[in-house]
Image 1 (cartoon, one colour):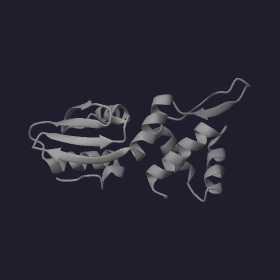
Image 2 (tube, rainbow, N blue to C red):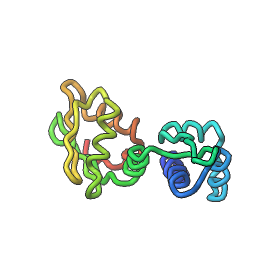
Image 3 (tube, rainbow, N blue to C red):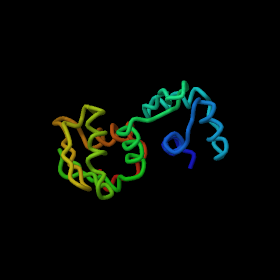
Image 4 (cartoon, rainbow, N blue to C red):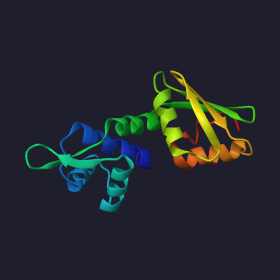
Length: 156
């Protein structure tokens, strides 16, 4: 429960559900949940989820996460069901119903060298693999960027 992705998810939940004015507020709320985190790590995580301090309208500031960033963080940590290669130039990624577009957008945004593009439906993403890249290379790139899918591959 203390993996990087879980910590990021909890930080996102804190920012979305509570009023936090400083990194110390976030660190205190994490500590209440039994999570110890350095300020440097928190800064990296806040950058990763695109959190920033914005004016609260009362001469102060609060942390907020842009709606698309908040959705994609949650989606990518929990909603991928499986990844399966089909032939040498395709992979099929399954998600929980309704999440394929958000996951597909995140994959495309990374502009990974072995991936030419994606096509998504409601719960399925077709990943088109560029010529000259192996299934192993595709898996390595995907796992490097989205560690939570490491155990979601059905074949290689």
